[in-house]
Each structure stands twice: as structure tokens, then as C-alpha cells.
Length: 271
Image 1 (tube, one colour):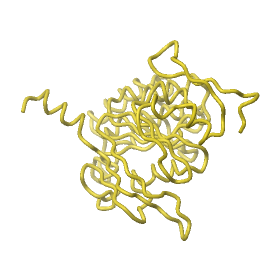
Image 2 (cartoon, one colour):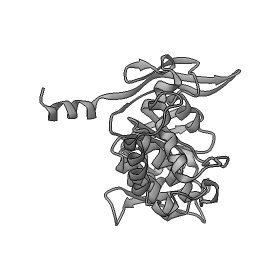
Image 3 (cartoon, helix red, strand yellow):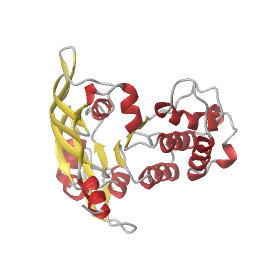
């Protein structure tokens, strides 16, 4: 097999596979028999109203929640059979609220991405320092490298967390509503940084227009179930918006990219 064929094989291979995945808290079913595959290199958005189970599903993917029933594999191995360190070597996570208790500067926070890959109490090498510096440059925070992390704006903090993920060199980046508290410019900026990493990205997101712009595929969730799984065009339909989000909208082509543009009926659309 040629190197090109090997790269194509890796790109098309399944990285996550779920079959009737369920997760419960006591007697309450949060996730209900979810079945789906995610391939290497896909940019997959998980959408749905509040309480749909989006964050719970992401926590299963990166090993924080253990499924109650069904199976979930990562790189053909059951997720629960990985150690936390092993998962951290392959999966980076950026959550909605950047940490506020990091009493360190930006470079030190970014350097935390190295932890899963090196022995305990080891020192940073020249290569490590170059990797940190390049990651900070990639998110355009060179002027903040020595700044106290806690003094940064929300958008800057999320860019730092993306830089930490870049240093972590994962196969998968999971983003749990990473843009909720950011202005439009920084929402686009953070997701463009994620896309530029060229790896599998899985994120929960509320802004459906931004989801259409960035995602290859969408999982539409409601009440712990997947109601639709497919391209943005097949998932973002007027019928789905009305039945799941209880909103009336029209959908047409976006003037700046090949995706869809959703226009909401703010005055008469509540059902």
C-alpha cells in the first residue's frame, strides 16, 4: 500500500463507534441507545436544545462518563479499557468555561499539554519549548505569553486552551460548547483554529449557522436520543427546527460559504 493509500485509509477509518450507548444517573436515563460512527478527520457537530444530552455524550467520548449499557469504542478499543493517561495522549478537551484557577502565565498553561506524553517530574526539552512557542504563535498570543492567564478575556482564554490542545498533539479534539460566551469574531476564530489542526473535531454547539459553516456532519439530539445524523443539509431542515427547537425558520444558501443560512422568525416563530 502506498503512503497516499495509507493516508486515505486513515482518513476514512472509524475512530469512534457507538452501539446502543446508554447512560443513566440513578433511574434517570440521560442517553438512550445511541448508535453512530465518527471517522478520522471529520468535523462533527452535536446540536440540540438545552438538556438534550450533548455534554453527557461528549463526556462519554473522552471517558469522564462510563456508559451504563451498550458499547463505545475508540480506535477499535472500548473507551473504558483505556487509562486516563492513554486517553489524554489521544484526546484533547476544551470545555465551555475556561478554568479560572490557573495561577500561572500563558506559556505555563500551554505547556500543560505536554503532561500526558512525558514522565513524571521530567523537565521541558528544547523541542518542548519550541512546540509551546509555535502553538502560542498559531493562536496569535505571542504578546500574552508571559501574561497571567486569569487576566485574559474569555476569547483569549479559549485560544490558550486551543494552544494547549495543539501542544498535546491529539488525534481528536473535543469541544463542549466552547463559544457560548464569546462574541461572533472570537467564536469564528476559535473554531477556525480547531479546524486548522487537521484532526477529528467533535463539538457541541448552539449556533446553527456557525455549525453549518464549519461542520462536515451533524448529530441532532433531543431528550437523550439522536433524531438525525447526516450532512448539515439533511439535518438542518425547517421540519427539524420546528419539531426539535420549536422555532419557525427559512433556510437558503449562505452568501459567503457553501453551507446553509438559517433565518429565524423571531416575531411569529414560537410554537
